[in-house]
Image: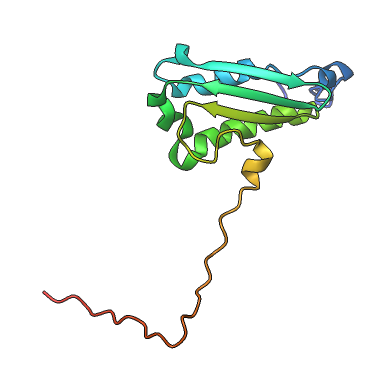
Length: 144
C-alpha cells in the first residue's frame, strides 16, 4: 500500500436520489445508541412515526426508570448526543426529528424537538426591585 499513488480510488461520498427519498432507520439507530446504557436492553421500546408531507419524524422511546440516570448522563450529555445523531441522520434526508421520552420525570425535556432543545433558554434574571428606603439587612460574621 502506497500513500502517494495517484491511482488511488477515492471513496464516493455523494448522495444519490434514492438516499434522499428514503428515511433513515430511526428505530434501529435509537436501539443501537441506547442499548449500551440500559441494564435490561429488552425493556427498550421505540416507536417511530414519519410524516412525508411535513418532512418530520416523531420518535417515542420508553425504558425502565432505573436506567434513566445512565441514559440521560451527567447534565443530559448522553441524551443530547443521541438527539444530535438523530438530527444529523434526519438532516441528510431533509427531515426534522422529534424525540419523546416516556417514563422519565425530567421536566421540560419530554416532547422537545432537537431544534427546541438547542434553542432552550434560561429564564430571564429577576430584577431587583428597590423597596424604597428600606434598610438592607446587616450580615454579621460567624464567631465561635
